[in-house]
Image (cartoon, rainbow, N blue to C red; front, side, top):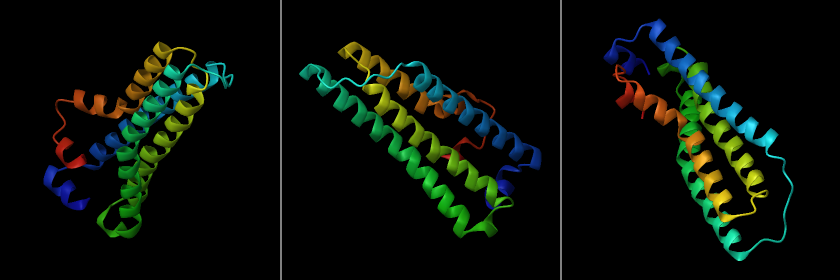
Length: 156
């Protein structure tokens, strides 16, 4: 927003750098999801042990609850960019950042649910959950590593 731009004295080059970093992280997340989807060798298993069913239920549910706030933020960002374009120098960029958030969470949910069908042991289900959690949290981990980034508080 223009007020944050003035507050943090951001130049056009700083804004472009943020867009490119976001695009890079989005690309990495999509590629990780694609690799998991493409190389997992999906074969649906109908009969499983009760322990595995319970584990899969809770791991998919917890991952869904992890994805919801990020997807909600993406929807809110897209809505705000559509309803208040005058507050942005480049409202399309703001909309695209929201789209990145929302679409990656949708892709991660679909791949996770599909990938869960191939798990045969409880350990496989839990390790898959940990991997997907890391993919979803990749932007937070990356932004946490940027020490010389004063805009962290304004972004979220």
